[in-house]
Image (cartoon, rainbow, N blue to C red; front, side, top):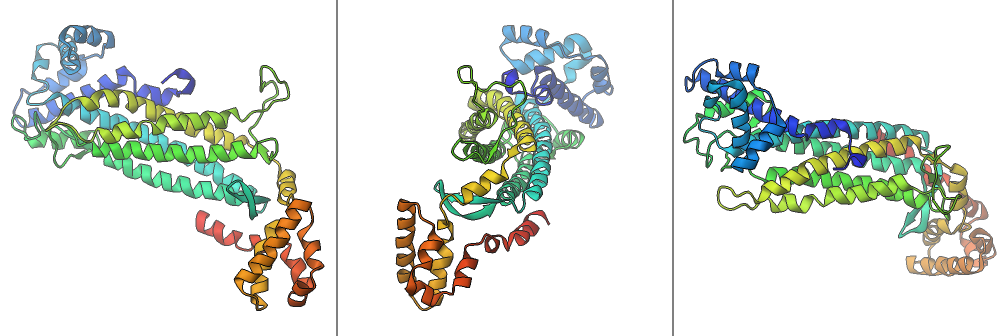
Amino acid sequence: MIKRYSRQELTDIWSEENKYKIWLEVEIAAAEAMERLGQIPKGVSTIVRKKAKINVSRIHKIESEVKHDVIAFLTSITERAGIKARYLHQGMTSSDVLDTSFNIQLVQSGKIILKDIDQILKVLKKQAIKYKLTPCIGRSHGIHAEPTTFGLKLASFYEEFKRNRKRLVAAIDEVSTCAISGAVGTFANINPNVEKHVAKKLGLRVEPISTQVIPRDRHAFYFSILGIIAGSIERVAIEIRNLQRTEVYELQEYFSKNQKGSSAMPHKKNPILSENLTGLARMVRSAVIPALENIALWHERDISHSSVERNIGPDANITIDFALTRLADILENVVVYPEKMLENLNLTKGLIFSQEIMLELTKSGLTREQSYKIVQGYAKKCFSENLNLLNVILNDKMIMAKISEKKLRSIFNYASHFKNVNLIFNRVFK
């Protein structure tokens, strides 16, 4: 990923330096186990750990000649650690190192992304409580529906990110496996206890059955969860973008003192960060289909998945981390306009209470169809002629004979819409 959309903590995980360090840890852990089993001389792992140094440029130079990354890596280690390093990789295949290390990078990334989600949850909870009873209009199809509160909107996002956290924990667990099983996963030239030791040493679980690779359905699950999280990010971003539209303007992204919105129009304050999140979400989701397609490899293994993972591994993780961090900042500093929310709530002059009127008419003895037709007729009239629904209905003798004026006026009140806000908040934040 480009630096513009990257944080150092994640780029460090996906750096060549870190990748080779993990490869070395896998090889040393395997050597430790082989020493204990008497398969290689004692002291190999100690010597390699002491003398081996990662030299990325040297590894690349060797790879340019041998055309094999793991061989180039092992050759560079032998150059530094000496003849004892020849005992590394005994009975192992390249994928034992590559797959186990790739999973470690995914776990390292996932744990940071979990922290990002925790920050999102913290900010959303704080803001939801702050705006718990701030009235605003709820919209369906982009059209005014019925009253809600801004706090409920935020609580909905909070609950969704709670689910995302749970999903990501499961996804991290899914890829927390290790395979040190040899050329086609049969342990023909390596003791299964080596795999057990490496898994325990590196905080992983043994892959129950591998071929030459760890099955890619595990990775597809992980990247699919990143795609779902990206969808949640975009859901929040789109809400912010829509509510910042000039005709709505119920909130806006924080706009700093010297910030400029447009090179041509000095008046502009654009929701550029939320728009950016929409774009980044697309990038993360674009990794899901290739990850799914990686599941079906030829026989015990081919390398069609390799080029895919070299791209989506760093890109998807780095991007989702950056997007979550940016979203937390947007939510922390968002500017909310409760007065404008109230103004928009009253924009249709009482039409948003049409359901209660209809329900009250059905209680008086009219059928639902009759009640709907009557209220819809008045709603259309009020909308086309810019009239107040309450005033129009007060002049209908038939309706007033069935609903008392006191009851009718009580309907045109937001309180009934907010009577269960505490119940909902208790469900979400308990």
